[in-house]
Length: 248
Image (cartoon, rainbow, N blue to C red; front, side):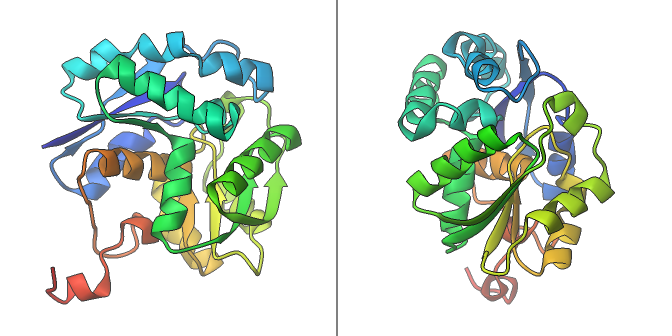
């Protein structure tokens, strides 16, 4: 049994995580503790407050009781808004408070891009332009080359959480770029678990979504590799052909 503890702000697309448990079809648990979202706004001041150490620490005891082996702050904007160095400080403080390996969705994206061997990325964001620009800057600091970034201008996570299949596919298509090796959808308020295979089929390339890389990052921290056959969880989780053929 591997347990990854998730700190999730408010209520929008947290039902993606039970879906991931089912799709992984393994002894992996993904308990979610909801943090105080404060003001639901994709605005820099609100995001800084949302990701404060006090708000994150409040949910840690519950995750420890769940037997968490790692903790991920399941919020992209509430981590990259601090900048590259500030986001590192955020997860260092979280790890110290939790007594566990810790990370955030923002670093999940950075690490997942590297794991795919990609450099050139396109960003398809739900955020306003100024917040999208901060994510772009974060990715560039990680070593990625951002060839395109699309901002949708949505202010609240609550609105993003109402988006369904058609809106998610349109967002990905609109944000894609011919030079991009991978497309990133960075909002954990966006439901994507059910659409990962369809997203990659539509774009013809790997797609990384916020809730997907959050789960992957937590498993990476717990030193648990989780492969699946077929495209249901996207390229990031797909069992390599040589392993599917019986290799180790």
